[in-house]
Image (tube, rainbow, N blue to C red; front, side, top):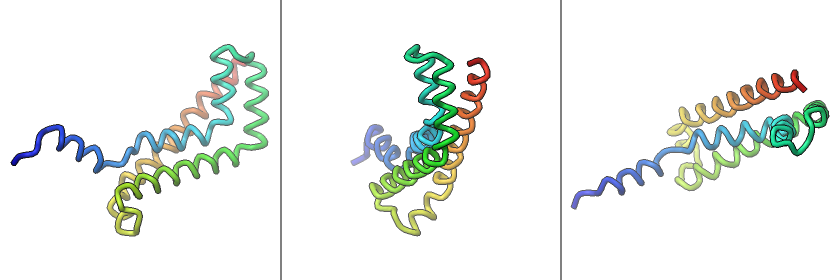
Length: 125
């Protein structure tokens, strides 16, 4: 009996790693020290000056904690995703090396883009 299109599409979806979601989550958590106050200012919850002061304080004092948190989120989501596929071993890492490198690239790109955007918005504060 032939498999339906839905069954093949569902299987193809489970065969891939959610590279974009994992990369975006890791990069966003890594720069949350600046993005959080910026979002609050854009929503009107705080003034731009207050958001700038908070972001500066958080970035100066706790930037490495946020970066390590982003790295932990990235590693945890990759581990969870590989674990669900029973690929959490050396052979699995070799099989998924290009998607894993894409995840790291997306996370770094997200971090850099949001850093640039929040720095640009900080000029106008």
